Length: 464
Ligand code: NAD
Image (cartoon, rainbow, N blue to C red; front, side, top):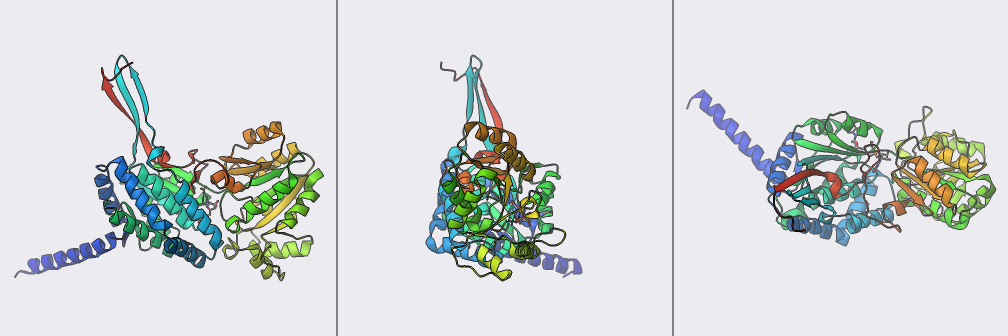
């Protein structure tokens, strides 16, 4: 046997071993290398093209059924809290259930039709192909599930790049999705990721020619990254939602709604109330009612400084250890012990306080007192920072509600309810955990992940 032959045989054996390994991993959609994951996803999408809309529907139902199983739902929520150290277990159950119940599927793909003397033209919503989806640490499983449902409904395959700090639970969720897909006899590798999600792997994905659409759910950094690739990209970025309360509002209800919205999953959702702007006339009564509904008020400067030093560095960098922690935990860290019924920490501040300006993602809620509703609206626009994300207003004055809705330009504007009614909890409409403010798609769903294609039949099918 010549030296060359031996070399070839060794190469062949290594390649077979690699194939065997990747096949094993394929069963669960988890790959060693990002390039292999993308190639597999590309092949999967090609096969998926031949499957019907009812097949897609069947696969999505199979995924939902897998996660409706109590043991799976509980496990992903428990794993998320343990791994990320953020959020509230029972609220995570609620959020994940919400995704299963209210994320649109294939029914979201509506066709436009034109008919006339020259025939029939259809505008159909078709897949992009392989979608690269970058997911956050704040709602890791919700985002993966929600994006999977919408993206598969639109006929795509998906390569996920999960947050490294939510790696275990993200990979587990993707494995369960693959298990469900396999049992429903869907093509292998419609939903894939890598064993080691890193920024480096995310960059490989963002720049790979076979990835045709990028979807980034996260802070401003990642949104900027996907928008810099030159590819079609959907950016679901940061928020800093203000809640305005004027003198015409139902103050008792507004107080409860704000505390409930702000404390939802320990303030992790990007839509959650992050600061209150209240008209002077009702501010004291609002605070009184917030305290009746689980708010702890900090009144002295020293305690406020202690809290600021705990959660923000001198140069206003977030202490990630505090993100998504409970009010009780944060207070305990500064030497204040409270009961479990304390859900948020409130304080009056001026409008330039870092708690107003920064997106904290923890149940700390500064309250800024202003002279009237017009000043409140103006300030709310300023502190929302042009994120175009979410704003809330409590008022019975239709003119002022309309004024704020029009001027603040947020993707979600909730009137007289907690912020989460904007994603379908106690409010009408479907849900999503990818809210695309910067790029304008709004609350994403299957149709967001589809391309418009025109299909023209000449001289026929006009039956009017
Ligand atoms: P993050 O920006 O730290 O991370 C999000 C994802 O982007 C992660 O997977 C991370 O690994 C990746 N990433 C970060 N920088 C990157 C870069 N330069 N290149 C490639 N990948 C990069 O966000 P987070 O802390 O996980 O989530 C919280 C932030 O996300 C908040 O600002 C919140 O408002 C926002 N958010 C927005 C939405 C929305 O729908 N608009 C939903 C959830 C979270």
